[in-house]
Length: 398
Image (cartoon, rainbow, N blue to C red):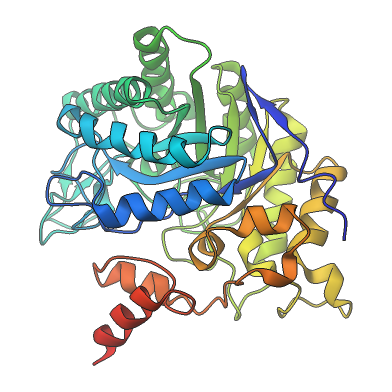
């Protein structure tokens, strides 16, 4: 099968991605005790770089060790600058062409209480969860700005301002955010944090070649979530997601990365039980693509594999990654295609696909053992194709 679409370079802001395959952020919980990349982290990212995807996103970097979902989560503070610079250097030794973007995140409600502070944007009815004050929200905004500057200083090509999967920035824009101050209630107020922070980022960076973008949920899939019409609604309503997409472009974002669902849900990661979820992700990315002119990255492509999946299509070829990646780009539904779990199953995925060696790919089996490792606070990798993580998974099950 041809690879004409996915092999074509694409401008992203003032930079160029060498191809249309994207390695999505995958939290792998293998930083050292200070949040710096460990030797295991470096080894993993060197393999990603060797794989040659057009864009390689880092996993979600926490702005502060006080708010973490993973015990060994990577951090991006002034104290981590040297370690992050080493990470970039190691990747660039292998690959000078791929764009390397750091994903920045404030965990919030999904922080792990055993070693972190659990925060929320709006009251949840749970007495032990701290509701952020206006001043604390402003401080979080300042931390995002500082992190973006650090990312530039250590050599990253840009950042991803994470607004997906249930973390603080997801909460901020949800209709369920009925705070009675300037950060809640109306759509204007709920997007105020985004607008204020982006303006401050751009002023601090003073470099329009440094890439800024957002991975956001088109639909959270929960009551009052983003993509619904109100705090008590759960049915999809596209008006706010499309308005937010246009806002991102107007604010000077260089790309939009479309996702959905709360961390670990089948909206986020199409499963064997719900294969049709991949079609919904395609449709949401298509809707964003029609609304903006900047590059749009689609999600859900790991599930497709070589067509050996449970999609309701009799022709195996028309169920495959290659078929849908080429089709969606050619049809103007998306500009780039993202894989997450597949990058762990085979870090050389992009290299093999672009070389016409799809039969040599170690395809993700959608077993989600990597997610089990993550939720167990273990180092994360493919427990099928990688011996180290296979043994780690076995020890977890003893």
